[in-house]
Amino acid sequence: MTTIDPSVPPSGTGCVECEAAGGWWVHLRRCATCGHVGCCDSSPEQHATAHFRATGHAVVQSFEPAEDWFWDYDREVALSGPPLAPPSARPADQPVPGPAGRVPADWRSRIH
Image 1 (tube, rainbow, N blue to C red):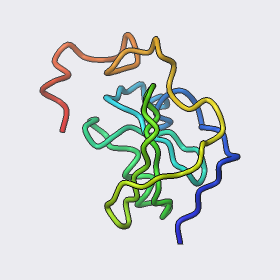
Image 2 (image 1 turned 120 degrees about the horizontal axis):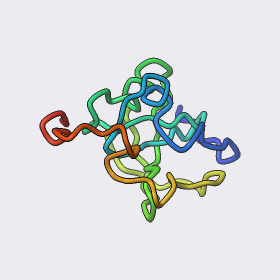
Image 3 (image 1 turned 90 degrees about the horizontal axis):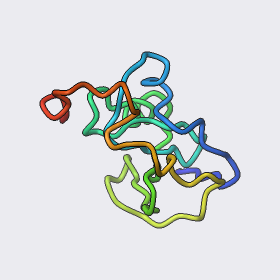
Image 4 (image 1 turned 180 degrees about the vertical axis):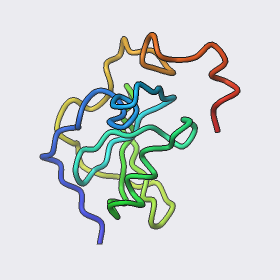
C-alpha cells in the first residue's frame, strides 16, 4: 500500500545526496511518504528512483515550481494527491539545472 503523509515537510531545497556529495541535478522529486528530496531520472545520479528502490516509498511529487503532479513508481502511473507540507517546490530562483555554481559546462552530455 502506498502511504502519502501530507504533514511531512521536504528534506531540503535540493537533492539530499547531491548536496552531500557536491553534485548537481536537473529536476527535483519529493517523496510523498517521508519528504526526501531527490534528483529526477534525467539527472546523472537519479537519486529519487534510488530512494524508492531502497525504501519502497513509491509515490513522489514534482518539487519544481508550478508543478503539482504525483508519480507512482510501483504502478508507473501519474496520480493525484493531497497538498503536501510547505514548501511545495525548490526556490524559484534556483537555476535548472542546479544548484548554481555546481553545474558543469557540458551538462547536456551528462543527462539521461
